[in-house]
Amino acid sequence: AGATFAGMVNGDSLSVSATSANFIDKNVGSGKVVNAGGLALGGTDAGNYNLTAATGTGTGSISQAQIASVSGI
Image (tube, rainbow, N blue to C red; front, side, top):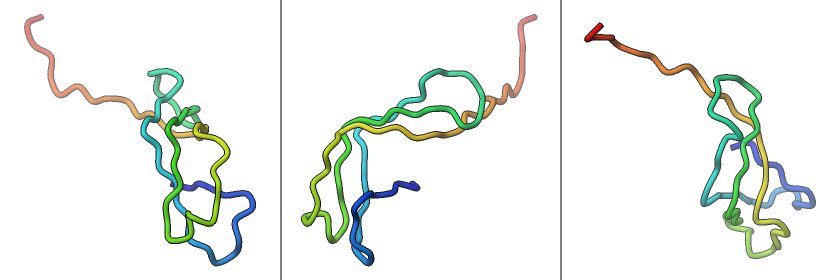
């Protein structure tokens, strides 16, 4: 979500999908870098464009996991 396309004609419909996306680490935080691979264009006007890179980066957040209970102590 939130992809922007440099050079897209106003009014055209484009989307992008990825076959993989991974945070650079497993630690809680916001604004964390996410690396995506296997990018492909979609949308009704995708045939009018050439995607020059199959990888990209973005940002996301990792929230704390909740532990429901602890036993055996």
